[in-house]
Amino acid sequence: MRRVVITGAGTINPLGHDVPSTLAAMQAGRCAIGPLDMPDVDRLMITIGAQVRDYDEAAHFSRQDLTLFDRFTQFALLSARQALAQAGLSFEGEAADRAGVILGTSGGGLTTQDDNYRAVYAEGKNRVHPFIVPRLMNNAAVSQVSIAHNLRGPAFTVSTACASSNHAMGQALAMIRAGLADVMLTGGTEAMLCFGGIKAWEGLRVMSRDGCRPFCATRNGMVQGEGGAVFVFEDRDHAIARGAEILCEVAGFAMSSDAADIVTPSAEGAARAMRGALADGGIGAEDVGYINAHGTGTTANDRTETAAIHDVFGDHAGSLAVSSTKAMHGHLIGGTGAVELLACIMALRDGVLAPTIGLTSADPECDLDYVPNTARQSPVDVALSNAFAFGGLNAVIALRRA
Amino acid sequence: MTVQDKIIAILADQALLDVSDVGLDDTLDSLGIDSMGLVETIFAIEEAFDITVPFNANAPAESGFDVTSVRAIVAAVESLVKERV
Image (cartoon, rainbow over all chains, first blue to last red; front, side):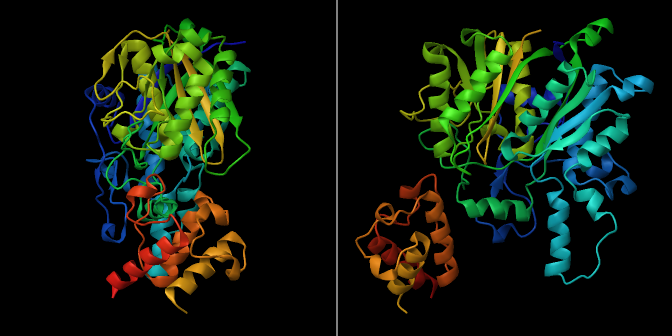
């Protein structure tokens, strides 16, 4: 079976508009969650979130492009551009046919939907812009990335709520392993932090009004974020042959379905996905040094995820580091696994473990080493990234140091 | 219809019971209403009384909205209705 490596990474998220600034923010334990800056915020019950700030879309895209690029597409295009620049790849001829893109998103062009529903329902307009459909469709980001970089092989969108990015990256891994492509751009993007997107989450009563504190006894819910990240997954031999810098290996992946409850997580389903990723990568449990947790800051997830880690790792659970970077960048929903993979790459390449910030009081049901509040220097050989979605869909990626 | 009658009707509807089977001393547990059922119940209460219920499923005890029994829910809603006027 072909081995797969990562040769490029790009991102725009609440912590930074590129990878170096994002990793610096994670290392500094910076919190990007703050008061929401948007119209009608006075009609919201939840008024905090992690927005991508100081971002001017017109500085990156032409007016004509923007008629077709929803915010989630913009995040994907900017991330892909950075990732390919780092990888030093461009695609022509047969190489283009052997390259593709698979991205995760939950809401797709939700901002476009929100704006246009407001126009026709609230403002009584009887006409919308002609490009609303190609702007809002869930595959708009994938298609625009493929057009921008001439990726003519496998291209599609994966939508599995909060596990979308991990499922997408698992598919990209499988494509290259199976020989269906040599290079895949993959990751995820989400721009659900719009009025309607927040209203929908408010309804579920699982959002915090004052902050995201994963694994802390005082945690009281999740906080939404937005943004995306895109990686260049490449056949290892292909990367070595062209002398590319290898960031890390994508060693294993597994997914599982709880087949139980539409919102309540299952420790058993989460454990099966983690075990599966280890088995897929031929990785011993004791080789894992860091887990980027799903760690949403809800009562149910953090307790369940902790139990699942105990179940999979046994005694080793006490000696590995687990952190949730959502306390810093919020929950990016379909884009979250992609941005969180950056923390895993930082652990493997730089030996820096991103902290779980805001962790002030211990919860007896959350008893692992969560790298509380301050980043830590510690060498890591294998890192896992967990994503457990509503619908009971779990997806775990294992990365190995190059 | 009093506040109490309305709330019992909402809870009975959620629990798939007859209103006569819902008493003031019942709890969500005894009615078989789970966490999702509770969130739906609170939504129905907000719509019926035009109030906002400060409920967070992560920290029910800290929400300032007592859901320990039908009686407690009635009292909590009566107080929210009074605040609204």
